[in-house]
Length: 71
Image (cartoon, rainbow, N blue to C red; front, side, top):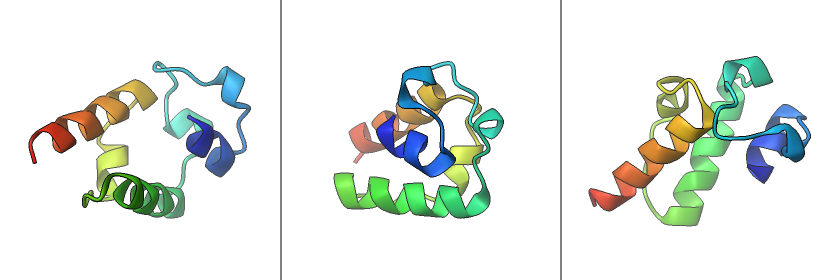
């Protein structure tokens, strides 16, 4: 959540699994940056569009976990 907070300028204490990514002001460039950070952290490839395919932070996190478990 700290990375989402930093990219969107949102206080991390205000973020949770139900936080709506678009409501946080997440932009396309932010999605590219975040997907790159996820790729670096977990040594996997994800498309930046994956972020926008999931409305909430929790849904996005679950999608990453599902992607990682399928490798």
